[in-house]
Length: 113
Length: 113
Image (cartoon, rainbow over all chains, first blue to last red; front, side, top):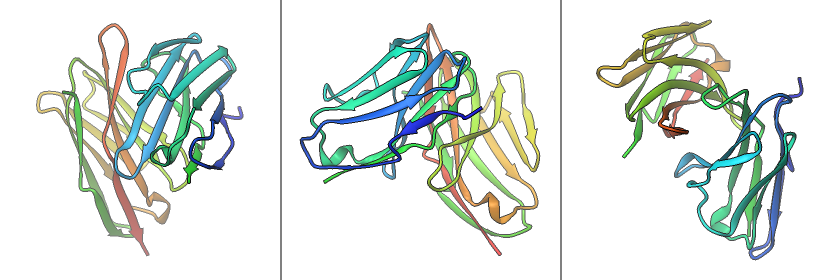
């Protein structure tokens, strides 16, 4: 079992550019979560999907953020346009079902300059 | 408003010693409480998960307790090792139609030789 796979591991981009973060959940997991982690705010849930359908996106900070899950094995989190305050580590996690313990990926460290 | 408060913010202990981390929450309705360990540069890894009816759960040298009446949980680490140095995050799950997670900001533990 390869676990949750995120790419890229690190991303440095200029303000105003589009950023796309990618996630492959564990095979067979029906729920997928996107989180953002900063020193100031800790871990924050941005959005989660169940059976590829977005269930709660109330944590998405602004319209500049969007997430998709076109199939059970792939999800993207897009930021357009990116801003320096978006700099953070973004984690993807998956679980067998809602309410079950999640397995986290290694995260993508995003730096917007 | 749902909140999870953890204490202390950081802690330094000598290798071999025991320690206890605290988590107080105001989350309703309560579904379960989870403790995660996050090593530097890695995603969080689940240590324990407890439902309303469980008041203690162990995972090796880690023992979590839950008092649902006072809305408090603790994570006790026995005979600490250098590899226990990490951030420990308390997460409370609520379910009312769909799942909501509330995160503490974590306790940073450093085990010193």
